[in-house]
Length: 205
Image (cartoon, rainbow, N blue to C red; front, side):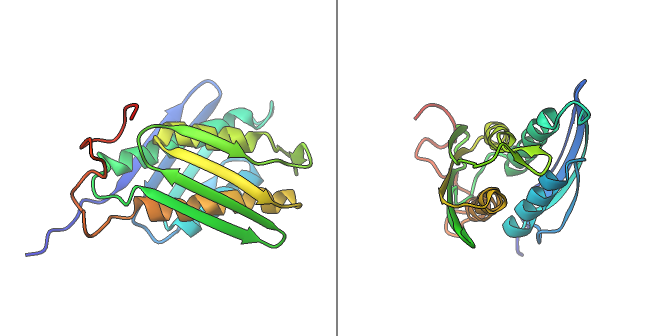
């Protein structure tokens, strides 16, 4: 009789004086999404993240966007990261590593990650303008930092070259999506083993 794997799903709620966010996700989904953060461009990026990772993603967020977009952007990254970590559980069986190089017209970006439970962000992405629509471009680093920290992922994001700021950031989110899809996939050759010689993921080595 075949053994059915436990669903890798999670729901996380985060409520502060600045934001109220709910995230539901399924790591083994089909890339369906329902996203409403109150920030149009962030919605667009999270939809790309879901579609290209095949992670089913629902995000609802209310925040103090009358001040600026910082708290909602950062806290959305935290909450999605926490949901990914929760869905991964002890991380047994995962491929662990993932990487993707994403061309988008004149832009090319590279994203590499290790689902190591040792969070770290390397961010080598430059923008030519301080804003993209109504959104401060500096907030994208804040989102990736918050996500990597909460998810327990070592994450390297680098725009190799590009001119259009929209293409630059979108290629980064698509790169993250494809790398996550690879790294979270269950390895059929080691479906029940934690991918580490230590027998656990985390720590300083």
